[in-house]
Length: 303
Image (cartoon, rainbow, N blue to C red; front, side):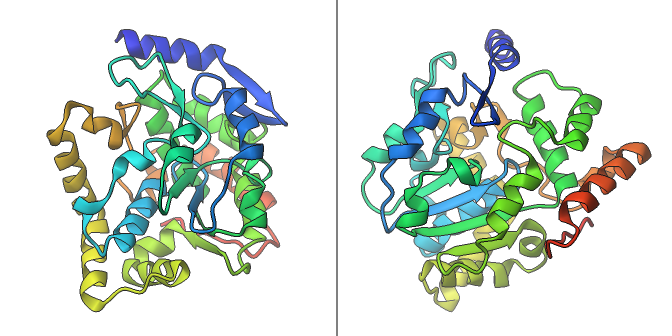
């Protein structure tokens, strides 16, 4: 309880704006964002870019399973304890002390799968000059809104109506507006090193989506390997994998939950927004969606 109270206090008092984008200085201090300007990108890096709660860890699991031939036991999860821009608890016994994760990433050898929620303008510039493989995954905004609410409520006290109103306004969301984020990367969808994916498409055709991932990464899979990736990336099987990780070590929960508290996997459903939005909230949000996506060619499935 003391740690949750500390996190709530830091979260409430720690907001700041960096180049017009809202962040929390405890989890993402300004120095972390300053470091992005000189972060060394390697040609064999794989960047997974998402707005928070758009299928980040599911997509990361697919990528890692592709790289290991479908064997979850071969995944080194310590290489992805946090997104690039965040700080993380290196000492798991003290959540009040965090260290920049980009420093750990810089020390890693071999192919790095780098997770990030940064908006386009704050990504390391070398992502665009060195052109590593980039996979961008997005999700319908209603389910994203609900999933983010549940994720945050495990860390700090949250109110659904306040959260929904912030999403309807879209003017000062943490990490930047949802629509600004997804549309800024939408324009790169035809670039050879970019793959733009939607969560709903992945749910409806997981096998075909995994093939798209593998083709983009130039990591062809045998039929047997593909079957394994499909099997182990099913959310029910991911939950089993995560349960095993947590059982192996007291610190295992830090590889399956944000700050060891907020699970990376919840329902993973399309349409859970119907259990949360009031009629008025849904109508207001529909207007926001129409305003932001009309004419862009980007559409979503909501059920």
